[in-house]
Image 1 (cartoon, protein in one colour):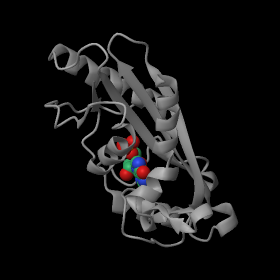
Image 2 (tube, helix red, strand yellow; image 1 turned 180 degrees about the vertical axis):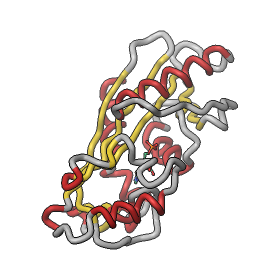
Image 3 (tube, rainbow, N blue to C red; image 1 turned 120 degrees about the vertical axis):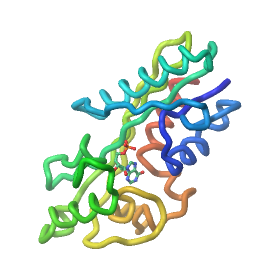
Image 4 (cartoon, protein in one colour; image 1 turned 135 degrees about the vertical axis):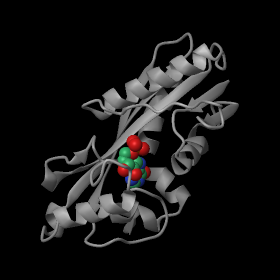
Length: 201
Ligand code: IMP
């Protein structure tokens, strides 16, 4: 069975492949699957965006005849929710600083917004809403979370997005100081995927 991940983000595809590869014979990102589609992520919630992405990519793949019964499309939408900012940037995490998707600018803006906020008030969590649309079967939806603290400066070179600002206390490292295996063991996406897998089984 085939799984198409509704994304072209290399890091994300690798993370998902590492975790769901056991359940599907073929796991492809959109480009690899021959799909070209820009989904406007304009819903008000992470769940709404994941549903929209899954539905649009599934409809395109289905119309092109590249998915059969049992094949699936997985879409996710992730946000960083910072307590001291009332849950911002949240669903707007990708476009926090600019309308484009500029990770470095987003990190700078976040550090600026939290300037002077003490560590004990810098709590935050990543949330990933996931929707798995399987041809011929009901959708599976799940949201995974991981809790941490926003650092006062960037730490680490790995990962992407807000990883270098997200300190995970149980391991004493930011996500960007972890290797992929360490991050995959505890991440928001891992927690969402575990819920999706449990529902699949
Ligand atoms: P998207 O849901 O992949 O579009 O991500 C939304 C925003 O969250 C983007 O700014 C990403 O860079 C960021 N993001 C998504 N996943 C992660 C992650 O695992 N670590 C850090 N930032 C992430």
